[in-house]
Image 1 (tube, rainbow, N blue to C red):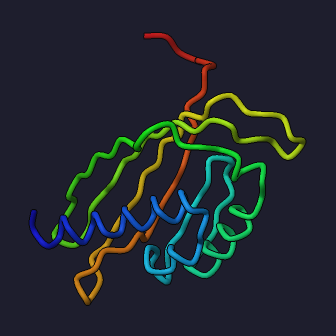
Image 2: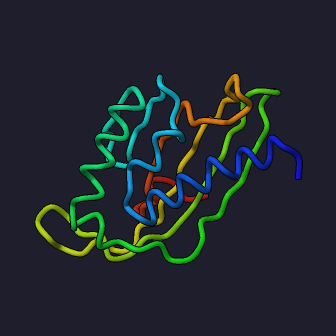
Length: 141
């Protein structure tokens, strides 16, 4: 494994650990200062501090924190340039609840992350968007 792969794995490992432990402080090194982030419900945030603060609140919410990942996420990486990598992930999450306390069906969550090499050769997320797969269809092929 080369040093870039190792650095990218370190960033992705911190992201997974932060979500698994519900510890937003782990994520301060994961996001760039100017990162943008959009969740599966369309909430968009700009900047590391805003993202980490929101995740701190989210992790403290039992409706979110009751959810558990079903196995390890599936991860695909695609190098765009020497300094930019796209990471696609898919994971299933069960047990999360709505604000009203109703248990959601298993979420089939997908994300797209753009990572950029930093001056110290670490990699940080500069943009991230989440979406949930739905059962409704508008087109059959």
